[in-house]
Image (cartoon, rainbow over all chains, first blue to last red; front, side, top):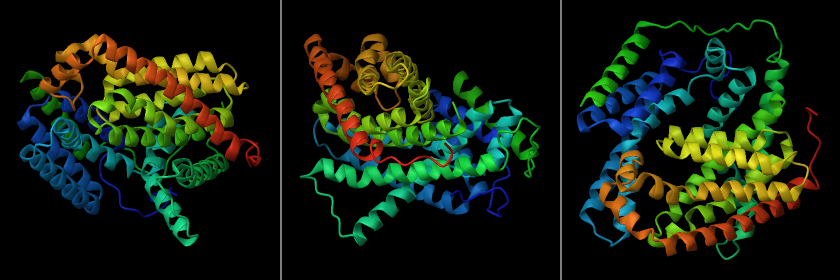
Amino acid sequence: MGRTGLLDGGREGHLHPLTLFALTLLALIQAFLANQLVYALVLALSFLVLLDVSPASFLRQLALFAVACGVVQLILHVDIGYVTSIFLGVAVLVVRVFPVVNVGCALMMTSSSKLLASMRKLHVPNKAAVGAVIGLRFLDEMGDRVKEIKRGMRVRGLRPSPLRPVRAFELYFVPLVYKCLHVSETLVSSVISKGIEADCEKTSYRSLSFGLLDGAALGAGVALLGVAVWV
Amino acid sequence: MKLKDIATIAVLGVIGFALGMGVGMITGMFGALSMYVSAGFAAFFVGPVYTIMARKVQKRGTAFCFWLIYGVLYAIMGFAVATPLCLIAGIVAEIIAGDYGNKKRVWLSFSASMFIYSMHMIVFVLVLGSDGLATFVESISLEQAQQMVSMYTVDMMVICVLINIVTELLAGRFGMFINDKFFEKGAKESRLG
């Protein structure tokens, strides 16, 4: 299911998963505290992190950010009554949490085995680590499964109608849950057959050492948090 | 709890969160009406997910893990202020659900926990006030927060509570209906046992 299996050659960034996790937390705290300048710097840092992992995702997120900013500007110039402030609030929120989403995307693109190995280093219980990795990976998977369901419905000539909401819900929801349960069972079968439940010490094919880039990214993140708190 | 159960909870927790968040954002755009029905309407989408998960796993801690995932994902999305409420909802759901063998208790555990969660805006308004809301909830400006606090009168809160009680109970029943129709009777045996 994942794009980045245990031994695949998929592109990965240079940052350690724990660095990405720490940066996600820092970006989250800064979303509450940062002023415009610090926000812009955190945003730039998050885009750099994403560029390191996947240039295609970097371009996609950049385009989405431009669209979100455009929507904010548009709403600022259009007054549609009470709902204006609600739309504006949602649009501003989307723009504001962009750094968190960018780093989160980078984290989601990190291979599951690398994530598992780094959680093991932190002594996270095995079951909790597997649950977290599957949940994280699945956020990325859901869109693909919904597209599959839409394709299947088109082939079978099924059309959900807003006049029959329960049937429409069943058409989308039931196959989605079945697909998801199938995926989770396949994944668990796979990791159990690879010996995840064995009590012996686990090793990893992936290099999990902290590098200079990790130090630089974390240093920049902590420094920006310091500035945000200080200002 | 087996690894298979953890995976099921993780996957269904993510689906429940995505559906709840998506529907909540759409209904949030319906202006003043959203203050009454936003969380209640989203419950019709989360209810089936919760019920299927609870009936499939049937282990102690399932409901708490579900709400823990909700809380963690909310924190990642920048709404960390909602996380404690999700944890309280998880504890209440866990107490009511018992050993998950009784369908009515599962239904009620969802309705009760979702009701606690759906009260988040009222709790925020009462506990945080306009200044706190503007500080901790990123999507709300001070002006909006003041407007919101002034709108949440006692009458409105009572109406919200009543509407949410009814919608959460109906959503729990709807979840049970979907579970019984598609996942309970013809459910296949898992390959993992």
